[in-house]
Amino acid sequence: MKHLLRTLPAGMAAGILCLCGILTAVAQDVFLRPAMEAFVDKDTLLVFPAQVDTFQKVRVRKNENPVFGTVVRYENELGSCADVYIYSLDTGAKPVQQDMYEKHCAETDQGILDLSTQNPKISVEHISLPGRNVPSGGFEAFYRIRNGSTQMDSVLYLALYKGKLIKVRISYSPEDSDESVHAGLFIDAVAAMLNKEKAADAKKPEAASQSKTEVRTDDAPKAGTES
Image (cartoon, rainbow, N blue to C red):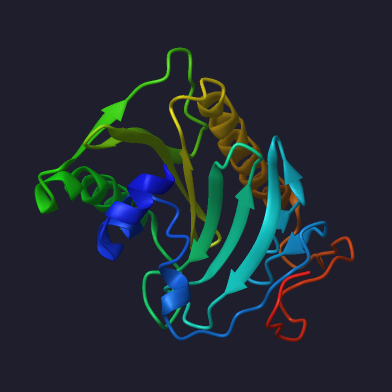
């Protein structure tokens, strides 16, 4: 998988992987968080734990441009990466509507498949996981990306939450047979969090005050290094 990363142009890597190095190339205010702390996104109030299945949270990056938004990165010991993006579709951070979300899902999926037209050495195809059920209220697609003899698998999950787009990108080696299962479990955990919060919001009176467990949020001072 690392070999594939090295051989891809930056634009293509942005399309198929977790965009791990792409967003950092854009001028931004970066807020980093210690790995062993839960993180609360101040826009959605979603709480991201330090550990999700086999994945450990390693950093949080917040961009003041809402189109780039916040990225919560997780990794595991086998080198798989899982990034959760919270973002808008315009710099004004206008709430994303259902029709905009559906269009974005289709365009994002097609954009990944079209990577093969940009570079004939790369092939991308949808793959299915037997017995895998897509979480309710979200879009999910698995891909196999080949570059010569090198291949990797990637999964995309997109959901709409409080006018924001929540995107999960997980990349892993197909040689590790259990990694697709762990990728699915990670997405299930994020989807369960979104659905739980949606259900809780539906039960609350509109004027009810919200309370949250005290954990560090992205209002903390900027940091240049990770703990």
